[in-house]
Amino acid sequence: MTTPQEELLAGTRRALLRRIAVAQAEERAPSLVATVVRDGEAVWTGARTSLEGHAPDGNTQYRIGSLTKTFTAVLVLRLRDEGAIDLGNPLEKYLPGTGVGEATIAELLAHTGGLAAETPGPWWERTPGSLRPGLANVLGEHPLVHPVGRRFHYSNPGYALLGALVEKVRGASWEDVLRHEVLEPLSLHRTGVRPQAPYADGWAVHPWADVMLREPAEDLGRMAPAGQLWATTSDLAHFAAFLAHGDERVLGIGSLREMRRPAAPADVASGYAYGLGMEVRHRAGRALVGHAGSLPGFLACLVMSVEDDVAAVVLANCTSGPLLFPVAADLVRIVTEAEPRIPAPWRPLREADSAVLELVGQWYWGTLGFALRLSADGLVSLEPLSGKGRRSSFRSNGDGTWTGLDGYYAGELLKPVRRPDGSVSHLDLGSFVFSRRPYDEEASVPGGVDPEGWRGIG
Image 1: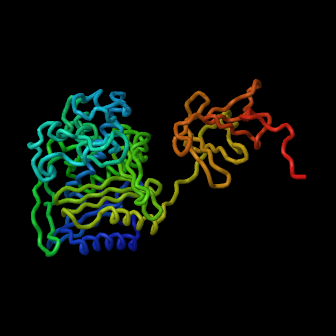
Image 2: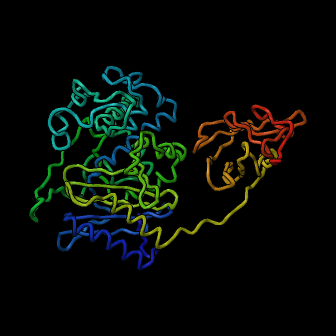
Image 3: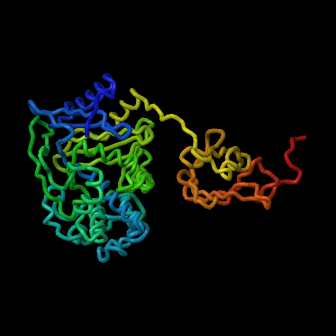
């Protein structure tokens, strides 16, 4: 991937460089490298290092820790989209005998399966995977620490189970499936389970002295689907573009939108939620999705603002040090504020269905006014005329009905109800009646309409 930095203004580039320089210097990271993606292309890469004469670049590998989970989640959603599994089914249906089979696949993806955060025994991130050769070693005698489905509790073993699920259904190793189904189609040639030069060494920085200690780089074995991967900012820039726009060879945009939606209880105070293999955060009024990661010696973060189509990847080689989410979020903010996105030209629909055009315009639910709009992407949206209230977009089912995609009416059916002459009487949306006039006596308003009609006080 090329990084045509001239596409950003000089002031923007300097602000980006200053942000990572402050993080590397003040938080004492041996090295830190970052890439910014805009409209699906890398537009800036910067690096800072403690070494003389050489700085890492977009081709230098770092371990990315739990950012690996997003790759594993993509594999699981691929299985779902092919019809090989159902996310609502318990794991036991596909991978029996684990002892956590009551948890559904969706709950494992969203960390609501009740599993422990870590494996039993020695610290799995800093010891060889050979100590945990089977799933029983990963889970231990008491794998559940919470009732299934009751709360969000981040679980690394849960993603080891998802990796085992992929292996069971595909009949191949998680590594091979990942390479053939994700890495190769997306041309992520510098991403893999083992390092390939050039790569950064992992370090621990002493908390009270400016000295360092080398960290071991263990093969995680069964825990690999939770955090094994090495990658570059260049590859992760490609991956961020995929997560934003989709690629039908790997996963369509509909499934990626599903991954990005909160699927676990949110931490309201911190603005944090978890989707299906992706973290959802809010910072400075901006919705950001992606994932962070860490392993001894390494830190990683990928975040993106889907609305602005700007993403940032930040990698560092220290066990603790800079909090990379604020750094990555600031890189996104710097670009979006300094160089606001220029929208694509408006273009009309190629064809307009007269039956759909008949539905657009003003509708009332009781006394609340709404507008139904048809956009060039073929979706319709229901929006409150006041600007405040419930809003949702809908996709056509091809039979005259529409299904809600988001908001309050997600999954609900929007159905035009027609009179004997074929004209539209009203809209039925999950039993709510939307009529062309407030409490229209000609529509089937539940409870009927007072025959005396509208009146004043007197």
